[in-house]
Length: 246
Image 1 (cartoon, rainbow, N blue to C red):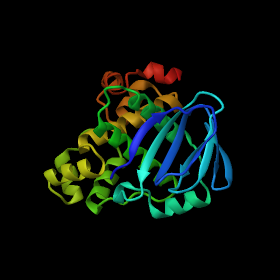
Image 2 (cartoon, rainbow, N blue to C red; image 1 turned 90 degrees about the horizontal axis):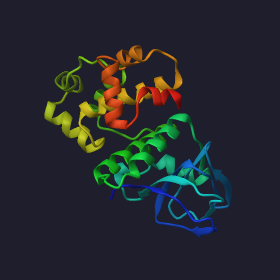
Image 3 (cartoon, one colour; image 1 turned 30 degrees about the vertical axis):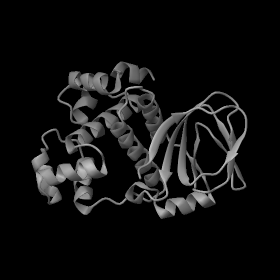
Image 4 (tube, rainbow, N blue to C red; image 1 turned 180 degrees about the horizontal axis):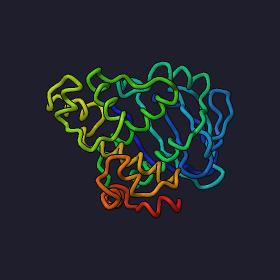
């Protein structure tokens, strides 16, 4: 079984229940007041929550809001929550929501709301959210060593000249083996993964710095500013100017 990702809104009246799966709830807008196994807290633009399986909880949303929700089956194997993260959630379900996770939730909300969104793309987005939450808890999901080497090499920089063949050699596998690893564990081929890395870093630099757009494009591996702009329009339906305006 795999996690199920969705974008949800809840009625304003109080609801109380427990369920047989873990649940990650990250706000997009609005707030949610919660009581989980005797602990009170608020899910808002500074906090998200992890609800452990079987934990009794009640909640209410005082105003209309949208929340990215990832239901994680307890028997999901690799695709489940790491044991240490479950233990942390049982002790302290509420966690700080940083800018990176907030941006990811907004990106997921945009994609998850699209009526034509395919289930494999939602699986990929759910995996990204699960990985981001696990990393913030200091419990990175365990990848095969060859995939770890490849991802580490890609994360060290955005070299536009790096080929899939070179990446496979560095990881110690064949090209077909590398593609199989990326598809199985990350849900996309290595070239697409690198393109996403470049685009996310470009978005961050555009939002958080005043560096010239042409300089940002070259820094993250695009051939020029026009290539970055085309990629943002095609993949994110936005432009550098719109991102910089916020």
